[in-house]
Amino acid sequence: MTPLASIATSVFSWGTLALQVIIVAGAVALVAVILKHPSARLHHLSRKAADHAFLGGFIVSFVSLVSSLLYSNVIDFPACELCWWQRIFLYPQVILFGIALYNEKVRKVQDDMVFLYSLVLSAIGGGIAIFHYYGQMFDPSLLAACLADGVSCSQLFFVSFGYITIPMMSLTAYLFLVLLYFFRRHHAKV
Image: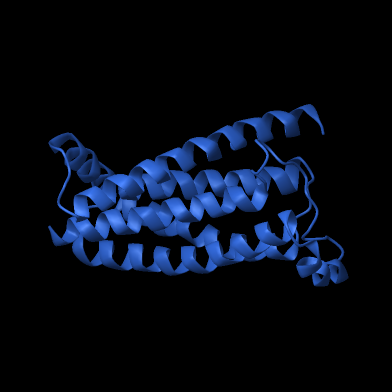
């Protein structure tokens, strides 16, 4: 692995780990808020997360876009077919959240549509990422058909912390975007 690949992998792996901690904490906070058992501080943090969901969605989708392009175009980790499918469902979200962030004054309809589109794109992309991750880590024979196109979907370029791979990074980004949907949806009702 080149020095740039090592640095990028380290930074993105730590970022993925941090985002996973945020997802777990956010999910616990959201459940507490929904069940009407939050502390005042927890409710305040939940509200802040909902208020800054456009920014969070834009940052995570943009960093995911940049990291995927860095890996494939600069570091030369060739993207397999499943990676391309995951990109197809992630890249439009940069545009969705970017436009929503820019036009934040047109709130209600925009909220509903941006986060509904993001939820659908994230659910499909996340499903592909789960399949890809499972195939890479537990059953490479599931990904044997990918070999016909040249780049094997079962190829592991790195495994950080014993479980973080490129599909896990993708899945983490999708889960974060799904969590943002639920924060916005809950606080839109309140």
